[in-house]
Image 1: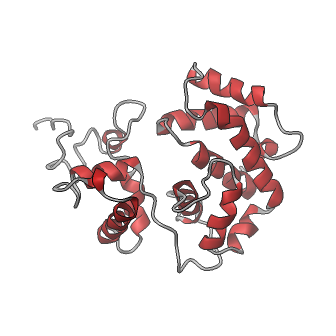
Image 2 (image 1 turned 60 degrees about the horizontal axis):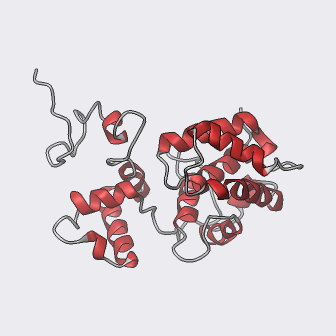
Length: 238
């Protein structure tokens, strides 16, 4: 059973690495990295050599053709340094407000430093969201949460089926896109808007066998958007 530190640290690593690759790709990479550098090897000294980390990436993807490839070692080392600076990550979460967590996460390479820092926002929700959506941790004061994650799946939904379908979502300013997303997530799941944000990240998102949303809805047959989505598979007649 992984420790709390391991769960949090590897969640942070996966969040930072998720860029220009599918969810299954990043999952496979995390599994391979954990096999090579299990548990606290992510942050314990001595740190692995850059070539060792890059070797895992190359073996996983059978290629170096990834926009993040030359940064992976730096990201790995940076997450490790973050853990060494905050050796009890569960206490760090418990003793921090979301705003303080957002600020501290800027210490991690590739997490982003300027607003809205979407990877940091995504990391915070993954740490605090109830299981199985997240780790179910509690922070000091959750009354002021960061912007909800505006994933590519959610962007597709808003532009194709959501409130922006009759206008040009792509032409909106980033702040307008985020405002629209926040309002729609709240309308879909007022008890916890993150439920909507989490679900819509899989909309027309590539998975291991076609779109993830298809895999999760029995090839569209159980999808509530079936009647409206032009990408829906044809239902089999009884």
